[in-house]
Image (tube, rainbow, N blue to C red; front, side, top):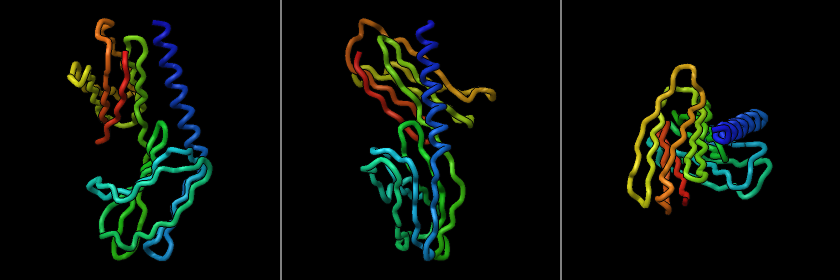
Length: 195
Protein backbone atom coordinates (compact mmCIF):
# COMPACT_ATOMS: atom_id res chain seq x y z
CA UNK A 1 0.00 0.00 0.00
CA UNK A 2 2.88 2.37 0.82
CA UNK A 3 4.34 1.68 -2.61
CA UNK A 4 1.08 2.70 -4.29
CA UNK A 5 0.91 5.91 -2.27
CA UNK A 6 4.52 6.73 -3.18
CA UNK A 7 3.74 6.14 -6.84
CA UNK A 8 0.76 8.47 -6.68
CA UNK A 9 2.90 11.12 -5.03
CA UNK A 10 5.43 10.80 -7.86
CA UNK A 11 2.62 11.18 -10.42
CA UNK A 12 1.26 14.25 -8.62
CA UNK A 13 4.72 15.81 -8.42
CA UNK A 14 5.19 15.20 -12.17
CA UNK A 15 1.89 16.88 -12.95
CA UNK A 16 2.58 19.85 -10.65
CA UNK A 17 6.01 20.22 -12.26
CA UNK A 18 4.43 20.24 -15.71
CA UNK A 19 1.94 22.89 -14.57
CA UNK A 20 4.77 25.07 -13.28
CA UNK A 21 6.72 24.41 -16.48
CA UNK A 22 3.69 25.50 -18.51
CA UNK A 23 3.20 28.63 -16.43
CA UNK A 24 6.79 29.71 -17.08
CA UNK A 25 6.40 29.47 -20.84
CA UNK A 26 5.31 32.45 -22.83
CA UNK A 27 2.83 31.86 -25.59
CA UNK A 28 1.70 34.48 -28.04
CA UNK A 29 -0.52 34.56 -31.07
CA UNK A 30 -0.58 37.79 -33.05
CA UNK A 31 -2.82 38.61 -35.99
CA UNK A 32 -0.98 40.06 -39.00
CA UNK A 33 -2.80 41.64 -41.95
CA UNK A 34 -6.25 40.24 -41.18
CA UNK A 35 -5.83 36.53 -41.89
CA UNK A 36 -2.18 35.88 -41.13
CA UNK A 37 -1.25 34.76 -37.65
CA UNK A 38 2.12 34.47 -35.94
CA UNK A 39 2.14 31.64 -33.41
CA UNK A 40 4.97 31.65 -30.88
CA UNK A 41 5.73 29.21 -28.08
CA UNK A 42 8.74 29.40 -25.82
CA UNK A 43 10.38 26.34 -24.28
CA UNK A 44 8.79 23.69 -26.49
CA UNK A 45 10.26 20.22 -26.69
CA UNK A 46 11.07 18.03 -29.65
CA UNK A 47 8.07 15.78 -30.34
CA UNK A 48 5.37 18.23 -29.23
CA UNK A 49 2.63 18.55 -31.84
CA UNK A 50 1.01 21.76 -33.11
CA UNK A 51 -2.32 21.41 -34.89
CA UNK A 52 -5.21 23.48 -36.22
CA UNK A 53 -8.73 22.03 -36.24
CA UNK A 54 -12.12 23.28 -37.34
CA UNK A 55 -15.17 23.33 -35.07
CA UNK A 56 -16.06 19.76 -36.12
CA UNK A 57 -12.66 18.56 -34.92
CA UNK A 58 -11.38 17.95 -38.45
CA UNK A 59 -7.61 18.30 -38.62
CA UNK A 60 -6.58 21.10 -40.98
CA UNK A 61 -2.88 21.30 -40.13
CA UNK A 62 -0.48 19.27 -38.01
CA UNK A 63 3.23 19.55 -37.38
CA UNK A 64 5.48 17.60 -35.04
CA UNK A 65 8.10 19.97 -33.67
CA UNK A 66 11.58 18.83 -34.64
CA UNK A 67 13.58 20.97 -32.20
CA UNK A 68 13.43 21.98 -28.57
CA UNK A 69 13.54 25.67 -27.67
CA UNK A 70 11.46 28.50 -29.09
CA UNK A 71 8.97 27.97 -31.91
CA UNK A 72 7.60 30.69 -34.18
CA UNK A 73 5.65 30.35 -37.40
CA UNK A 74 3.38 32.55 -39.50
CA UNK A 75 0.22 30.88 -40.76
CA UNK A 76 -1.73 32.22 -43.73
CA UNK A 77 -5.34 31.49 -42.80
CA UNK A 78 -6.86 33.42 -45.72
CA UNK A 79 -8.32 30.23 -47.23
CA UNK A 80 -10.26 29.29 -44.10
CA UNK A 81 -14.02 29.55 -44.27
CA UNK A 82 -15.88 31.57 -41.68
CA UNK A 83 -16.30 29.59 -38.49
CA UNK A 84 -14.66 28.54 -35.25
CA UNK A 85 -11.25 26.90 -35.02
CA UNK A 86 -8.64 25.84 -32.49
CA UNK A 87 -4.88 25.73 -32.34
CA UNK A 88 -3.55 22.99 -30.10
CA UNK A 89 -0.07 22.39 -28.76
CA UNK A 90 0.09 18.83 -27.49
CA UNK A 91 2.80 18.35 -24.89
CA UNK A 92 3.88 15.44 -22.73
CA UNK A 93 1.21 15.84 -20.03
CA UNK A 94 -1.07 18.60 -21.28
CA UNK A 95 -2.69 20.17 -24.32
CA UNK A 96 -2.85 23.96 -24.69
CA UNK A 97 -5.94 24.88 -26.71
CA UNK A 98 -6.56 28.38 -28.13
CA UNK A 99 -9.93 29.11 -29.70
CA UNK A 100 -10.33 31.54 -32.58
CA UNK A 101 -13.00 32.59 -35.04
CA UNK A 102 -12.87 33.70 -38.66
CA UNK A 103 -15.58 36.25 -39.41
CA UNK A 104 -15.73 38.94 -42.11
CA UNK A 105 -12.16 38.15 -43.24
CA UNK A 106 -10.82 38.78 -39.74
CA UNK A 107 -9.47 36.49 -37.06
CA UNK A 108 -10.35 37.00 -33.43
CA UNK A 109 -8.95 34.90 -30.61
CA UNK A 110 -11.30 33.93 -27.84
CA UNK A 111 -10.39 31.84 -24.83
CA UNK A 112 -7.51 29.54 -23.99
CA UNK A 113 -7.62 26.39 -21.91
CA UNK A 114 -5.26 23.70 -20.71
CA UNK A 115 -6.36 20.08 -20.80
CA UNK A 116 -4.32 17.76 -18.63
CA UNK A 117 -3.69 14.32 -20.06
CA UNK A 118 -4.09 11.32 -17.79
CA UNK A 119 -0.98 9.61 -16.49
CA UNK A 120 -1.33 5.87 -17.10
CA UNK A 121 1.23 3.46 -15.69
CA UNK A 122 1.41 -0.31 -15.40
CA UNK A 123 3.55 -2.02 -12.78
CA UNK A 124 3.48 -5.68 -11.85
CA UNK A 125 -0.23 -6.50 -12.01
CA UNK A 126 -1.44 -2.95 -11.23
CA UNK A 127 -2.72 -0.28 -13.62
CA UNK A 128 -2.49 3.22 -12.11
CA UNK A 129 -4.40 6.14 -13.62
CA UNK A 130 -4.19 9.79 -12.48
CA UNK A 131 -5.81 12.81 -14.10
CA UNK A 132 -5.97 16.45 -13.10
CA UNK A 133 -9.41 17.86 -13.83
CA UNK A 134 -10.99 21.19 -12.97
CA UNK A 135 -14.41 20.46 -14.43
CA UNK A 136 -16.95 17.78 -13.71
CA UNK A 137 -16.33 15.84 -16.90
CA UNK A 138 -16.50 12.12 -16.17
CA UNK A 139 -13.54 9.91 -16.96
CA UNK A 140 -14.29 6.71 -18.87
CA UNK A 141 -11.81 3.86 -18.46
CA UNK A 142 -11.79 0.80 -20.73
CA UNK A 143 -9.32 -2.02 -20.07
CA UNK A 144 -8.65 -4.66 -22.72
CA UNK A 145 -6.80 -7.97 -22.51
CA UNK A 146 -5.78 -9.35 -25.90
CA UNK A 147 -8.26 -6.94 -27.56
CA UNK A 148 -11.17 -8.20 -25.42
CA UNK A 149 -12.88 -5.68 -23.13
CA UNK A 150 -12.47 -6.87 -19.54
CA UNK A 151 -13.47 -3.69 -17.67
CA UNK A 152 -15.38 -0.53 -18.46
CA UNK A 153 -16.01 2.13 -15.84
CA UNK A 154 -17.07 5.76 -15.76
CA UNK A 155 -15.58 7.78 -12.91
CA UNK A 156 -17.00 11.09 -11.76
CA UNK A 157 -15.28 13.44 -9.38
CA UNK A 158 -16.67 15.22 -6.36
CA UNK A 159 -16.71 19.01 -6.20
CA UNK A 160 -13.61 19.10 -3.98
CA UNK A 161 -11.49 16.72 -6.09
CA UNK A 162 -9.09 18.08 -8.69
CA UNK A 163 -7.10 14.87 -9.12
CA UNK A 164 -8.74 11.60 -10.02
CA UNK A 165 -6.75 8.53 -8.98
CA UNK A 166 -7.67 4.96 -9.76
CA UNK A 167 -5.84 1.66 -9.34
CA UNK A 168 -6.87 -1.55 -11.08
CA UNK A 169 -5.47 -4.97 -10.27
CA UNK A 170 -5.28 -7.48 -13.11
CA UNK A 171 -4.83 -11.21 -12.70
CA UNK A 172 -1.24 -12.41 -12.37
CA UNK A 173 -2.22 -15.48 -14.36
CA UNK A 174 -3.27 -13.45 -17.40
CA UNK A 175 0.10 -12.67 -18.95
CA UNK A 176 0.12 -10.89 -22.28
CA UNK A 177 -0.88 -7.67 -24.01
CA UNK A 178 -3.18 -5.13 -22.38
CA UNK A 179 -4.59 -1.83 -23.57
CA UNK A 180 -6.13 1.00 -21.53
CA UNK A 181 -8.26 3.71 -23.15
CA UNK A 182 -9.10 6.71 -20.99
CA UNK A 183 -11.69 9.13 -22.41
CA UNK A 184 -12.50 12.61 -21.12
CA UNK A 185 -13.34 16.01 -22.64
CA UNK A 186 -14.17 14.38 -26.01
CA UNK A 187 -10.61 13.04 -26.19
CA UNK A 188 -9.20 9.54 -25.83
CA UNK A 189 -5.78 8.51 -24.55
CA UNK A 190 -4.33 5.06 -25.22
CA UNK A 191 -1.69 3.07 -23.35
CA UNK A 192 -0.49 -0.37 -24.46
CA UNK A 193 1.47 -2.54 -22.06
CA UNK A 194 2.41 -6.15 -21.40
CA UNK A 195 2.41 -8.10 -18.16
